[in-house]
Image (tube, rainbow over all chains, first blue to last red):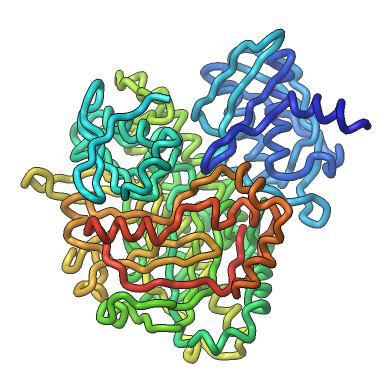
Amino acid sequence: MKPGVAAQRQAAKYRQLPHTADLAWRIRGQSLAELFENAAGALTATMTDRRYLRRRERRTVELESPDREALLVDWLNHLLYLFDVEGFLGREFHLTSLSERRLKATAWGEAFDPERHPEKSAVKAATYHHLEIRPWGDGWQAMVILDL
Amino acid sequence: MNQVKLRQVDEYRWEIPREGKMRTRGLVFASEAMISKIREDQSLQQVANVATLPGIEGPSLAMPDIHWGYGFPIGGVAAFSLEEGVVSPGGVGYDINCGVRLLRTNLQRSQVECCIEELVNVLFANIPSGVGSRRKDLKLALPALKEVMRQGAGWAVKNGYGAAADLDHIEAQGCIEGADPERVSQFAMDRGKDQLGTLGSGNHFVEVGYVLEIFDEKLAAALGLFKDQVTAIVHTGSRGLGHQVCDDYIKVMLRAAAKYGIELPDRQLCCAPLNSAEAGNYLAAMAAAANFAFANRQMITHWVRQSFEQVLKIGPRDLGMELVYDVAHNIAKIETHEVGGVRKRLCIHRKGATRAFPPHHPETPAAYQETGQPVLIPGDMGRYSFVLVGTEKALTETFGSTCHGAGREMSRHQALKVAKGRAIIRELAARGIVVRGAGRATIDEEISEAYKDVAMVVDVCQGAGIAKKVAKLRPLGVIKG
């Protein structure tokens, strides 16, 4: 794929912002569902290079949270839980349903293999620090800070 | 950005005057040279925010390694009365009982210089680190995991990792009272059960080094340190278990803060009154996670010892690897302190700050009654670390607290940019330091330039009288997560 176009599209999905000790991601999406999918992508991108992950396994996630922002944090922290317990890292994500307080999603990926997957940064948690989801242009934008 | 008002008190103290919703003043320990850098992120605002929380006793404190955290700044210390005050998971951090221990040996630098690379490789093989570090040789069933959470380092000793004498040289004897594994979620236990005995990632490390300089001969001798002595530092915390406990209880505290009508300038300061059920549950879970971390460091020490014995082909007696001290720097402790002439039971939050009790304090170990409690301040992997002891002044001014490390100055993103095109590992090797990391990005993110100069941080603590320098250590070999 031509680097220019792909890089541009990739840059729009999620982008790192300056933060001293942790990692701040600015996420974008045309819809809220896409925003959540891209946030998950940013999480994986923090830990490894997504391109090396195969769609070998599938996980379904169902969550309920007090509000939309908390739902985003809980979504990411649930993915971290899957990683810690099963080594699972998602390459692609699909939000099958998403409301203000509930989500159902599928993740495709595989277990982390240090032989094949580049190691980047481990993540302790997605935090509520400066957490926000708001409309942006035709779509949505979120800021999430990951504790490394 | 809002400029927080700052008034210089003396060479090392800066006050954030009480105003608006602050219930007390802020007190930042720093040098003039550090202040403009400190102003660049929002850490001072965070010090002021903490000062708004109910039941705060004394000032909202910040150590010289202060930097921007979430809710509480890293390098923050805040005390709350048990009757009127609150406990906040953000004041402890996600990595509950992230802490550090210093091990000393009978060896001189010259005895290990031949074998640093091999030693680093063997340590790397024996101690899982990096993304997804887990042990294959130690899988804990749930009942055993619960015992770890109840007994802390004592569990490790019972299971053959180190000696009972080690416990006297660990903060809280390696076990915080009141730990209740039933307050720890299944999620947290699932995350932690395969991670005992692992380093994790980020700025965690095991470092082999030597004593470069002694500042106080008497204190050094009492701590068992001598010039050119080979040392080892272990820096890690409670892994996924602690992170999950924090996340679980942040949710609880968000609801609790609303329930008890606590106004929060920042969501991440969510808290509950210390006399509430929510607070009790958090403290019990936090203690359980803290005990997991104490056990973790005790076990990793076992493999550090084994690695040394294997590579240097010596026995434990010749190696003489002993624990100088082990301290937590992300924790909430119930301690008795004198405030305004009255002795009070307080909940002290130390987030990126270390306890530093003086000589003759009942919680200072017997071996250190004359010297004061040892404090280990790790610097970045390219420079140096310091050994200090606690002082009376710390007890009266900072609830017996001091700094914890160098503190980051540069974002990871920036650090990667600065490191780009450079062979960091080779640069360090050229300076006599062998570094092995699980991922290249980790090394690049951890370059010296990304950190404050820990010597400056320690000099402020010394200058302010809240710690006393004993020795300076220099790295020889490091394994990083």
